[in-house]
Image 1 (cartoon, one colour):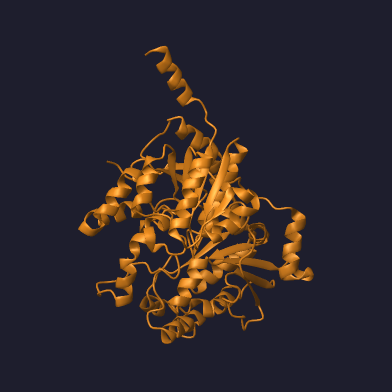
Image 2: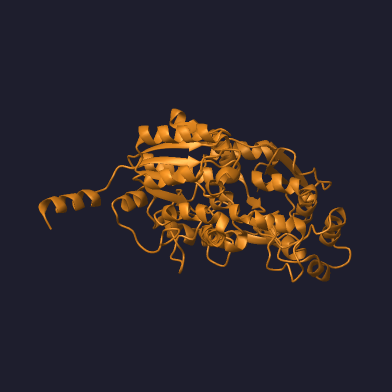
Length: 477
């Protein structure tokens, strides 16, 4: 090896300053944008720089910190591509980070904030930069399946061929605690520490939040439940006329009935999603979207955090602070009726859902998306066939690492129609010191694994220097 070769290799292996361009074209996935923002902060803290090409919802999240380094996208493809080319020229990024791939995979079908077409894909492949995808929910297997579907059809083969060279060099990053920090056999990607854990809140701010929602008299002895509903979830539920949210406050009133202290549930949704509970034991507060700091303050001030989406970033924020609970349903209506006795409130509500809209009770882990493993041999409905046709732009729960059988952040699954078992679970998580102590011990073990990881900036520097491990790209030639 010549002296010049040794110098070139040494330069390549030396730590590099990260100049990252984040592409966040999502129109609903605020969790993905929040994960991208945390990675950008890590890059800046590590001496690097970050810019954003962002959809309007994403820009609202990142602009308070990054100001004029944020270029907002529009519904015009040509304009977005013009801004992309300008930023590539001006920023000269050595890392391009995609906050999520669904919006890009959709090409022109992403009509809200389009960016990708075949010519753009060719341009992207010619850029000398590290291409990175944040795998927020473990959707890499879904992307690989989509590629297989596309390459098998003559019409879509051109698209698949344009994507393949990009995916052969695109590196997967796995933000933790969204993913299990420890080694997972067969998993693709680089796990990294995406946030300091446990998250902390000024005690004075916590006291103010609790007093605001529980009242001054019950700020300490009351129980505050934070309920997070993703934007895509409540919009899809309304589009499908799915009835759960019309009666969720009744279900919750049943499950907190054994809690002697006053209970308030603060639900962040569109501001109107949950009805007021008829029970005096439960106060319901609906809020529209909050600034990130206020949202996090509510999470960290609560005694329990609840969602119907097991891949919610909010569940990750609960680790080390409060129990995180995901409402799921593992049962068919027939199984619920066989289990729940006559006179059961949960039985009555399940039947009411079915009367209001047939087929409303079904297995799910990301409401209102239906799980297919209990669908049975019946032919899919026209609506289901339409949903399946759109599946390439929406990874299915059973294909996701966090929604499958592999480890993930330590949240608790609660059966939505679990009856007495779920009622006992809520009572224990809200009032039983022994159960709460067990949850905290499990969280501490998870945090220890999380803290052993590199942060995102260090992982990118390692990748830029050419040092990588394992099977980490999306596709192989």
